[in-house]
Length: 295
Image (cartoon, rainbow, N blue to C red; front, side, top):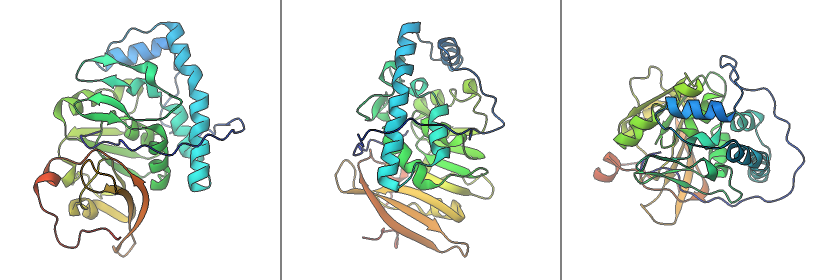
C-alpha cells in the first residue's frame, strides 16, 4: 500500500462464536495447493524474498489462523449484520503470513500474522499492511462479485488485491513507491494469482488503459478530495470506497461512492478511519470545484 496505505484501527469484536464452516467459493480457475512450510518457503524464494522458518514456527502461525477467522466473522456480523461467505472464503484462502515483510530491510516477519489484537504492520518505505478487520470490512462493503474488475489505489503488501482476486475476475493495483511496487509486483505469480495486475504509478489518475473501467475502486490512503479521473473510470453500477480527510489528522471518514446506470454519482459517509495520506498529485494540486464529500 502506498504512503497512503491503510493504518486505520478498528473497534474489535471479541464475542465468542460457533465454529466457522468455509464454503467452496474460491476462484475455480485457480488450482488449490496445500499450504505447507515447504510451499511457503518456495513461494517466498520465487518472489525474491528468501526466509528461514522452522516447521514449529510455521505451525505456530497456522494455529492462530482459526481464531483470526472467527474475529473477522464476528466483526462483520457486528458491523454489517452478516459475514459474506465469499469474503470469508477469500480470507481463508490467502496465506497472510506471506505478506508480512519489511521491504526496505529485506526481512520477513511471518510471525506477526494473525495477531490477537489486529493492527497495521510496517512494510518499510512508510507503507503498512492494513489490519485484517479493516480489510475485511472494506472488502465486504465494496460487494465484490465474480466477474468484477477492481482497482486498488495503494498496492502496499499486495494482500488486498490478492484477497479480491479470489472473488472477482481481474484485480488491478497501483503503487506509488517505486521500490515497494517493483518488489511487491513479484509476489503474485508464485501463489498462482494470475488475475492480479500491478504497476508503479500515481493512483490519482487511476488506470485509464483498462478498457471499460472498474466495478470496484478501493482507495487505501486518505485523500483530501475525490480524484475525478477515478470517478470517470467507475462503471455504471460500480462502487468506490475512499477515505477523505486531512493528512495525519483525526476526523477522516470512509465514503462510499456509487454510480447509477444513468451515470449519476451518489455518496454516503460511512465510518471514521485513520489512514496515511495519499501522496503524489493529490498533495500538489488544489481540489477542483464540486469535489467536496457530503457532510
